[in-house]
Image (cartoon, rainbow, N blue to C red; front, side, top):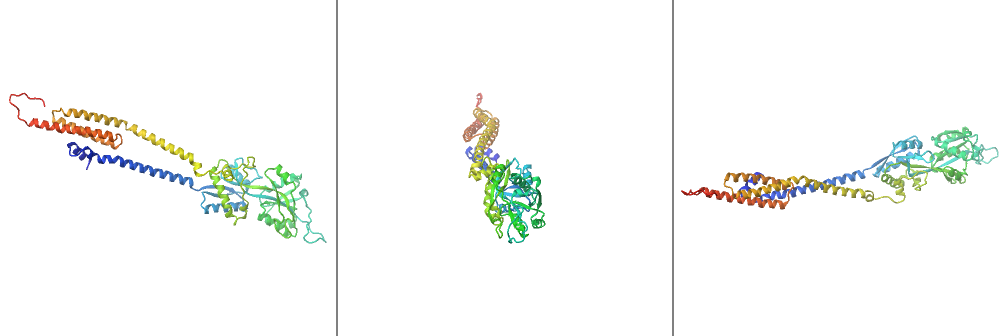
Length: 481
């Protein structure tokens, strides 16, 4: 049934007000149900989007090099494990020429993490996340050629101590120039003028030839104790028939005190294998650390997650890259050489925040904000409907005025005009109710007024019809109806 038909039936009295308003009474509830359902779906969508953005993988770019080095192989293995395990933090290695170049990349802000050497200049914005491994300095000299009558395999060297390096040529194993700086620090500790010691870079593959031809008098290498580079260089020296004589840094503790980036360390007997053992006794040396550092300002939550993943993946990577066993937690002391990243410190100290700890304030403020927005929206909607409520009230008053007028009206045409006006008032009132401008109580009051008006119009029309049908009385004056 159309709205026009319902209004016509209500106007002529064939239907009651309650019957006609049943669809209208259901309409606001249906609309409210749709609004509630849409709100719930919106909240679910917002929550799903928030969860997706909160849990989607974060990729951190890490500068490491050189590509042929042990550090790159370890970082590459870790990146593969992170991807295979579908961890929330992923790694993207950025190849550099070495730790110094990696530090510059971090300083420039082109990467999030970097693998650097602790004995090289550290960017001010660098914060330690983990100790990737510790390198030891290994100094040795080939034993001098055996004179006649000497037992084969005996060790005699023209260089027996670091102070004997004056005027000698020292080959620095590897391609990095940083180890030349390490040699300078060692020489200065023993009062040897570095300018009187000639240094030259010697690749591992050329160590044997350099020793055999007398190109070098001693060699320096730096790396983990299980480093293949050091092992190969020591073995290459021995293969020339001249057993390596290791030079002990007896002043390692004093050197570490003067240079905080170094630590006193020792190389155990037989660390590099061989027969006889190389070295045959424990010797003192110094060590320095390779760090994974993060740029200042990196997300504490992301770095804490990365640190947790790092130490979890360490167990998996060890089988492929034994160097992973050397990964250690950073120094969390305030006087550490490189300040620790807060997220890494939280993981080390067991103070990681849970999801609710991290986002409880945000959730609480979001709920408060939604509540305030809902209240403000309700007030604003009520404010917008104020004029509509006022109009409805004035129309109800107009209907009551027409009720009084209809009872003393003397014209059927005037009653029809008022009926048409009442139809328009009915239409506006139903619209106001469906829009929520008036409530059920106001609609009930209007229904009573409309019903009384309808009854008054009907009664008045009947009375006028009866009066019109009576024959006029001769000689009688017409009386007002």
